[in-house]
Image (cartoon, rainbow over all chains, first blue to last red; front, side, top):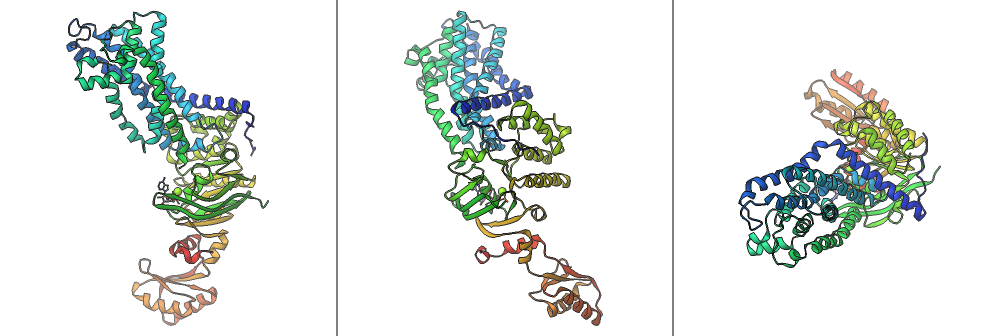
Length: 278
Length: 318
Ligand SMILES: Nc1ncnc2c1ncn2[C@@H]1O[C@H](COP(=O)(O)OP(=O)(O)OP(=O)(O)O)[C@@H](O)[C@H]1O
Ligand SMILES: [Mg+2]
C-alpha cells in the first residue's frame, strides 16, 4: 500500500492556503447536502411562505398598519417582515445542522484530522450565508407574485438585501453555539420554541404600537424589528414606527444589533468548540 | 523495530462523579497491533479519545508518534487515523463523495483523493455502492466506509474503537486483512474489541482494562497461559449422575470442580491432562456409567478474560 504523507503546511502562507482549502471543502460538502435534499430546502422555505399567507389573508385584513383602515397596504408591510422573520428563524437551521454533525460523530472525526479546526464553524457560516441569500431570492420572487414591490432604488434594494443577510450572518454564531450546547438533535429541534417568540414579538407582522405597552417596548427593541423597519424604509414600504430610539433610527439599529450579537456569540461559539474536549 | 509509538502513563480522567480512567498505562511498539479489552464502561473509548486528541485528561501524560497529545495535538493529528465507536460518515453524501471529502481534508489534491477513494472502495467491498448515498447503507456498509476513511493516509498510528461490531463474517475478515496489511507496512494499530477471537487473531499484545485501571498487559498466548491448565469435562447423559461424576473428576483434578447444571456437565482443571483423562475414563468404565461426552477443553481467551474480569482488580494487578 502506498503511504501518502500529508502535505507540509508549516509556513504561515502554507497554513493560510490550507485553511482556505479546508473552508472550501466544508462549504462544498454543505452544497452537496442542499443539492441532495431539495425537499428539505423546500420545507425550510415553506414555513415563511405559509406564515405570510396566513398573515396577509387571515389576520392582515383586520390590521390597520397605515392609519388608512384595516387591511390597507398590509402586503407591503408584511413582506419585509417575512424576509426579516426568515432571517431570524434561520439560526435554528444552523443549530440543527451543527447538533446533527456533533451527534453523528462527524465533528469528532474532523477534530481528529489535521485540518484547520475553524473550518467546521467558518465553513458552516459561509455555507449558511449563501443558503440564506438563495432563500431570500426565492422569497423575493414569491413576494413579487403576491403583489409586493420595492419602491427603493436598485442600490437601496440591494442594501436592504445586505441588511437582511447581515442579521442572518450574526445569528449563525448563535446557532453554532446552541448547536454545540444542546445534547441531541431533538433538543436542537426544540429551539424553535425560543426562535418563535424572538421572531414574532417584533414588528414583522404587527406594529409594536398596536401591542400592549410592555410587549410593544420589547418588540421595538428586538433586533428583528430593527431589520424589518430598516428594510421597509429602504424598500419604500409603509413602516408604522413609534417614537422609541430603535424605531426612529432603524437603519443604525439594524447595522449595530448584529455587531453586538456577533461580539457576544462569536467568542461563545469558538470557546464552546474549543472546549468540546472537556 | 522496537520503538514505542504510543505511550500513556498514569492517565486519569473524571466525568463528574465517575472516574473513567484511574491511573491507566498503555504502551504500543511501532508496527504492532495492541488490543484494548475490557467490559462495558471500562474506559476503552475514553482512552482512545484521549490518545486521538479529542478529549483532555486530568492527570498523567500521553504521547503518540513521538508527540505529546496535549501540547502537540496538531502533529499528532497528522499521524493518526481514527474510527470511533460511533460511525461518523456524512450520510447525505455518497460513499465516494465521503472518501473524497475526507481525502481533501487530509490535504490530498483532487486527483489523488479520487484515486485513493476508488482504491479503498474496492478494498472494502463498496465499489458497487460507490455512488449511493450512505444514508441507505446497512450498518455494516457504513462501518466499512468509516474504516476506509480512517485509512486514507495509511497513518502511522491507527485507532479503531470496536471496528468490527455489527459486521458480517466477510466484513470482519476484510477489516482483519486491512489491519494486518497496515501493520505489516509499519502502522501501529490500537484497537478495542469485545470479540476475543478477534483479539487472539490480530493482536500482538492485549491490555485488559477495568474501572479505568490496568488489569493485565500480555500477549494472547500469555493470557491463555495464565488460565493455567486444560480442563477435564464430563457431560452427563442423565443429570442424576452429576454427583457421582463430580466425585470421579475430583479424584483426578488439580483445583476446584465446577458443576454446570444447565449443561449437565462437571469440569475441573487438570495438570497431567492425558493421564487424568485416562484415569477418569477408567473409573467411568469400572462404575459402568454411560456419559454424553468426556473430553479436554483448552482454555480460550474468553475464559481467560472472564476469569480476569471476574476477580477484583487489585488482586490481579501487576
Ligand atoms: N461524556 C461523558 N460524560 C460522563 N461520563 C462519561 C462520558 N464518557 C464516558 N463516561 C463514563 O466513563 C466510563 C468509561 O466509559 P467508556 O466509554 O470509556 O467505556 P468503554 O470501555 O468504551 O465501554 P464500551 O465497551 O461500552 O464501549 C463509563 O463509566 C462512562 O459512563
Ligand atoms: Mg467504548
